Every structure is written in C-alpha cells, then in structure tokens.
Length: 371
Length: 216
Image (cartoon, rainbow over all chains, first blue to last red; front, top):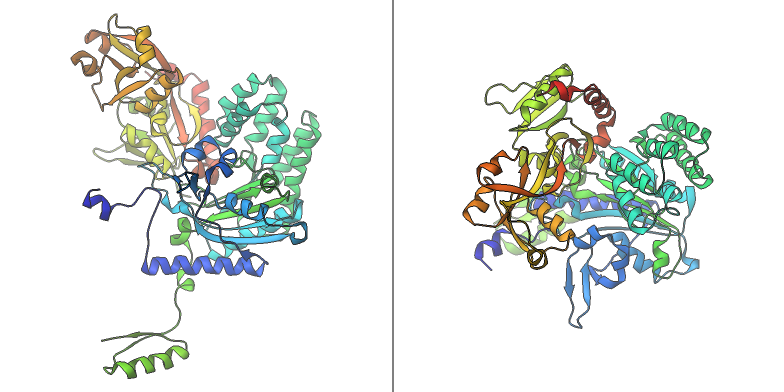
C-alpha cells in the first residue's frame, strides 16, 4: 500500500474524531443513555460482526450491497454490524422468555456500511437508540415516540419536525394483492414520492380510476392533525378502503391526538409516504428532519415480526438517532462538556505534585501536572 | 422565511428555464460572472452550477431543489424526489456507431466496448439485456471515440443527430428518452413541502398552459 494511503486516508464509511469533539460526543451520548435509563431501558452490546447468512433474507438488495463482508478462519461469511436493530433482534430473539417481557434496551454504538466516493454522509454511522420489546399497540408506540421526542428536547435541537407514517397502512392496502418484487417496487416508489411510477405500478395491478386516485391522494398526503382528519373522513365516505386500511388510519389519528394532548414540542406531521426504509417494519414508522441537514436525523418504527424470525415472537418498536449528524447543532453544548474547575499544578517535586493533585481531585477538580 | 434554493444547470437548458420561469413571472437573472441570484418577490434563490455537479449540490442540501436532465440524475446514483417534468429539453440516450455497424449477434453474446459520459446508465442498460460491456469513460466529444477507433460504439445524448452525421456516425439504437425534471432533496422537501408544493402547482400551470410552445 502506498504511504500516502496508509497515513492520510481511512477506509470509506469510517471516521475518527478526537479531543473536544470526542468529549462532546461521549457526554451527549451518555446523557441520552442516562435519559433512556430513567425510562427503564438497560444497555445492550451487540457484536461488531456476525454471520451474514443469519440476516441475508432480512436485507433489501440495496442494503445488502452496502454491507462489509469478511470470511472467518472456518470459512464462514461474516458481516460487519450495519443496522443495530437487526443485531439486537437476534440477541433478544434467541435469549428472551415470555416471563422477561416487556424488555427495554438501549445502545450507543457505531455501524459500518460502504459509502461511495462522493458520499460525505459519514456522520450517519453512529446510532444512539432504544428498543421496546413485548409491548404491542398504542402504549408501546407512544412510549417510543415520546422517548424520541424527549431525546430531541434533551439535545435542544432547533426546529425538528417528526413525520409519522404507517407500514401497516401500506400493507393493508397492498400486501394481499401485490406480489413480492412488485410490492418492493411500489414501496420504493412511494418512499421516493415518485407518483407517476406509483400510478403505473397500480395500473399494472389493475388498480385504476377512483381507487387509484384515492390511494395516490392518501399516500401523497402530508399535513397536520386537522387536515388528516378531513382527508380520512373523505376517504371513508367513498367506501373504497378495506376495513383494515381504514382502521390503520384511525390508529394514526389516535396517536396524533395523544401526541397533541401531550404537546411535547417538535411539530408532528402525518405523512403517509413514510412507510419505512427497512423491510422488517410492520406498524407505525417515523423519521425526524431538521433544517440545514441533508437527510433525516432519526428514524424508527414497529417491527412485530422481526424477533419471530429468530424464534421468539414479540411485538417490538424502537428508534435510532444519528447523533454525530446533529452534534454541531446541539444548543448550549457546554452543558455536555467538563464543568469542573481545571488546575495546572506546577509543583517541581514530583511526589508532592502527585499528592497535591490527588487532594484537589478529591475536591472535584480536574488536575493536570505541569512541568 | 429563507428563500427556496434551486440549482440550475449551466449550458443548453439555462435559457429555456429562464424563459419558462419568466412566463410565470419568476425572474432568473444572473449578473455577469455571478453564480447566485435572488428573486425576492417570489422567495426563490437560484444557484448556477455545472450540470454534472447539480445532483451533488441537491443531495447535500446546498440547494433544496434542482432542475436537471434524467441522464445526469441516473448517473449520480442519488435518490431524489422528482416533482415535475418540464415541457422542454426532452432528448434521447442512444447507442451510436459508424454507419452500418449494428451490433452483431456475436457482439451481443461476447460483449461490447463502449465509450460514454454515462457509464452507470450504459452498464445497467446492457447488463439488463445480458450483454457485457467494456466501458471507456469520457468527459466530452464522445463522437471522436468512434471516429478515431477508441471504441466501436458510443452511448450519448442525441437531439437531432446532426453531430453524429457530421462525423459519419448514426444512431444504432435509441436506449432511453430522457426529460428535464424538477428534483428535491428529500429532507428539504419534508421540511418545506407546503411552499414547494405551491411552487410546483404554479409551474404545472405553465406546463398545462402550453408554455412549451412559447419557449423556443
């Protein structure tokens, strides 16, 4: 390898940071974990790599392409941790019993994914998150949403907006009538708000006219609670949606009502094109956006089938916050840095200097030993 | 409120964009050598960037919106929200070569050598047809590659075909129709969807009102 590459480049998808920046990162991350702890969440450590075959069928082709793989000494193919939720699901799914539920776990760790040469979004590779296992329905969804909103409040991030959607609504509309690859294309087209493509895909599924019009109107909707209530009432009047799909819209409204009653700060918008990037989502999904940042800063949702894949059925919901992405936007970052007084001791006698330093440290000061 | 930022491509499309916006009472006017201009009445800020760099500016949110050909968008590999297709600038990505040099069945089987500015598109298009491609990436004057023998085939944008004809080349196969789109950075759209939707509605009126006929 060339000298230049050895010393002045790092592999794509990695970053290093240090001193004050690292201190802020560590303290903010600790503060979030402390917050999670007050909600009853306990830390979980996942392995840095695991067997690729374990997760293969849970990955989208695009996600699979971005994974770093390696081969161990026995010849097994491994993958580096690219999504903490997946690794947590295996850990929990293979170790929990019914008596353990509900279980609350949290983490602050890095993930590794390949990034293209022009991709500068390396700040997405540190996730702080929480997963609530064994709590179905509204109580579980609300708890995780409120914990996420509390995390945003703790960091005092300005003007954050939460977009709430539902994979369950998408599934209720399409899962039974659209086969695998077409369903994947439809999901991608809705996520990308590519309405011409959505229309074509619906046409291919013999969904035309008033039904296609209504679905396009619903999935392209973004708005506040009142606008959503009007849209929902209109959708119900025409009696095109299945009972299941209509019930999912009612459920979203119930969540919005509860969030509004709690009035926790960040604006919440209902956004039915938010159907989740991960294939394992099954219920509500959400993403948080912030002005001046090029992509979402937090994402999460309900994934009731994932632990079952590892042998233990348990409804689950969680979120991840890309902490590195927002660190330079945290209001009053000094809150997270050292607040103890600093002393630089200049005592020439080394033994006396160490003794004095110990005494001062016991008083709560930061002491460095000068020459 | 901060103005909506829109990246515009330098080159062939700029004048058409300017005329289209002017017809809707929106002003795109860059002073000499300036790359940023403001239409404060409509709350719009325009950035003038190199065509091939435009997706990068939008991807990283430097510009929230951009106007760009599908050829460039596909090549960038980034995901955007496509909000509108403009009624001008539509063209074709074509496979071209010397006159009478159509792909032989053997070439289809063994694979072909292609010079192009669009390696991602070319690779993906031919691989989807189960044809292997040896790519030579060029940044301009792609016709020369076929004329001088760097590669027997080229993949390039073709509007009238007159440049190809002048070099003794011809379109062997049109591969894709490409349009000019208004795109958005997804996060930017999510934060400012009301203003962006209002802008798109205004632009759509221009499209529906047949502005393409008045825009040369």
